[in-house]
Length: 250
Picture 1 (cartoon, rainbow, N blue to C red):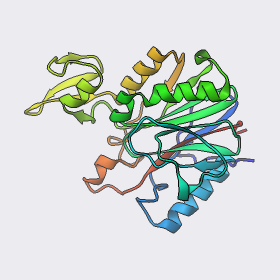
Picture 2: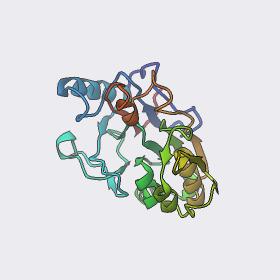
Picture 3: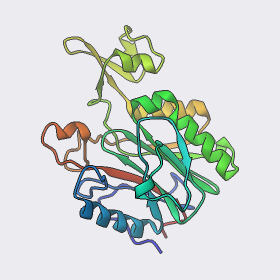
Picture 4: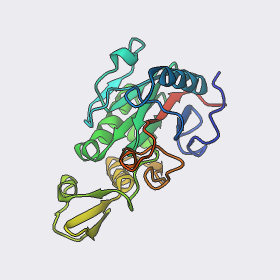
């Protein structure tokens, strides 16, 4: 049986993903990144996370791509698949997505769960659409059955990007009034991108009917979250994880 998650961790609202799943996102002070902290500490944290989930979290070798993998029992930390999203239909295997500014998205459907790591490259390339398609195939469900929850990522007031990012999402980079992109002369033309908003837009177009979460800013909420960009300002180095498994937390 899973144990109660730490009080400071994020958890979707009870109706966000449905009662058939266990889902959470860790916060600062609980580093889970093997490349971002002492190996013994990270191993202990991953073991504790498994106890809270009541399932073994399977981490990915994330590369800001769009590939999706189906979780199998033989996958472990030492042979992590190179992918940025995963699907699980096994209650013993939890999807685990590492982040520290990029957007984690968790999905639930009858008979299956999934998670995706969505930085701007993966998001523009279709990682969320690929994940939804893989989940529907694995679980034998319809798009209308899929629910999505967005975890914490860098927020729209903090995520400054150049014209190449605006263009990657199909917007004309010279136009100042772009939906989900706020123009900022800085002094060269720059934009502030709403990463969670862009994800909601793409999920809605894909046909996902229930979408929630995404209201936190990892860079702005310094005491609460790790932030890759914040590390340059002297903030602690670490990685959080958004995780989901079949079976209720109880």
